[in-house]
Image 1 (cartoon, helix red, strand yellow):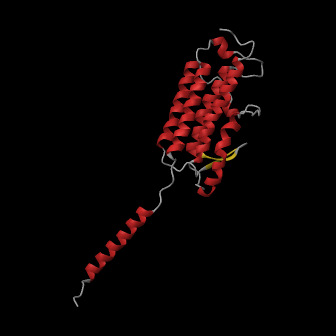
Image 2: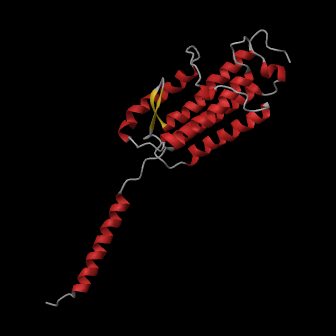
Image 3: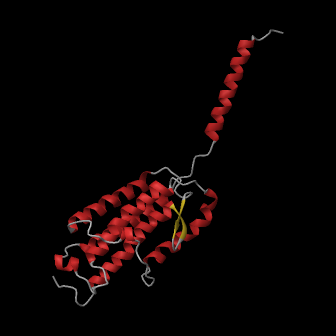
Length: 214
């Protein structure tokens, strides 16, 4: 029987080991990303709520922009500022904190049960919520045009994130003071629902009988 040189045996062993490692790497499951339907649904809601907000502030005069129904009520300008600053703040929360927290995929399936009710809960204005100090209006933008530009820039970034991310956004969670644990995808849904909630508030201001005619 012909003897196989030890060098050849060593090479064969290395090739076998490399082959098995390659197969293992190929077989290893990738982190789950958003489905096509999840991306489409999120983008649709982001675009829909963007349009409704922009329509609600379009063409307002300075008097209409700054009108307050009462001293303790926000003007359209103040509500719009709250929407704009919340947009950027909440998205930063998603990318810089929630997505950098440890993944807990074991919570994913149970959390999805909140998807259906999340929008309705946030948009329902029968429950009043006090805005945190950092999201209260402080006249950050000098003009309506500047505010709208900032909002659109932030919303574009949010949409681009949903369109392109390959991260498992449904396995990373962050606590909400009322809605409890939400995954990152739900937090992005919350951004849309939050703007819808306050667009309704803008329309309430505009419906006040003392709202300036022009």
